[in-house]
Length: 203
Image 1 (cartoon, rainbow, N blue to C red):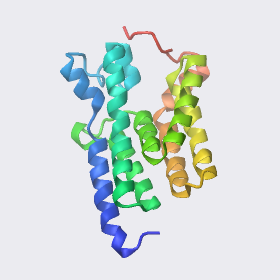
Image 2 (image 1 turned 180 degrees about the horizontal axis):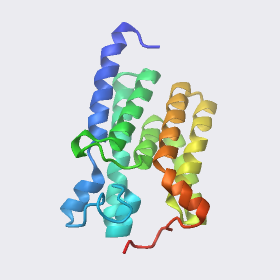
Image 3 (image 1 turned 30 degrees about the vertical axis):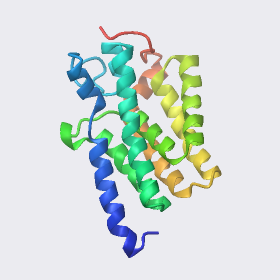
């Protein structure tokens, strides 16, 4: 899968992607906008949904964009420089893990939904749009961001496999597993009917 000539570029690209992923958009934007630290407020998750609850639409939108770009840019740039699907897939995983376990923020990161979605756009605009539409439809129907993310990223590996992106499909099976784990408390609340809905600010 990885030849000797591709091993070092793959490792270097993955390290860079991890470092990019480790830059927390939620924390930086909240600091710049004089908002509470999202790790210490609301759900405690430094992601767009929690920023929406504690700060409103603009900081949440900026957080979503920043987190998505962390996935999109490393994947898109690597795809141009090293057009080797397993390498690009590895870079997507590294950026995602950087968001979950950021070296710059004591390894306390978000849940990775926007970064995983951004990486899909870096691979394929069509697949990224399809995943976004899936997320939006479920989100609008149920107003539960976590449910939309879990359903969407359960479907993503099958979409990638159907489109012939085998390496990415394998990586997104792993990413889906991480997402289920990071949303384990959300899953409990969804089953109990107590999961907060979008549009409600944290007290």
